[in-house]
Picture (cartoon, rainbow, N blue to C red):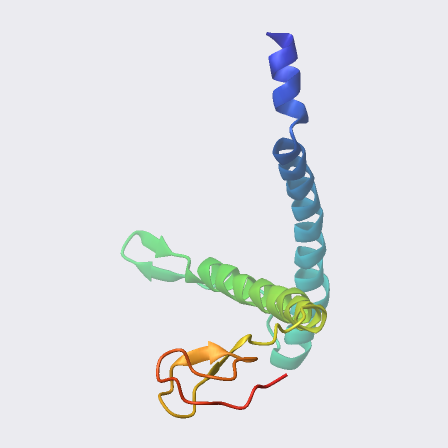
Length: 134
């Protein structure tokens, strides 16, 4: 029973998942610190008020704390923007650079517009002669 448990723990996907969770938690701390310690003070310097938690609306005996919701919404938008502009966009541009665009092995026949191999000298459908493309 112990050997089966050990096999389960040492399988590649369990270890990969554990590493991803740890790295994700560390990265979350970095992004949250960037938003809280850099972006929020910048917004406060420009807009004036960095914290909306004191904003409330009283209806009878109840109190709606919409300021807390505004704080959470602004924080989410800033985190999403940081992730998009500092992680997703650079990753997409790097992966596009390193991904080789495969050249198509097919082309269209000029007579019947069916797909034929690039090196073909005659169309298989309409049998018209075509100039091969290297």
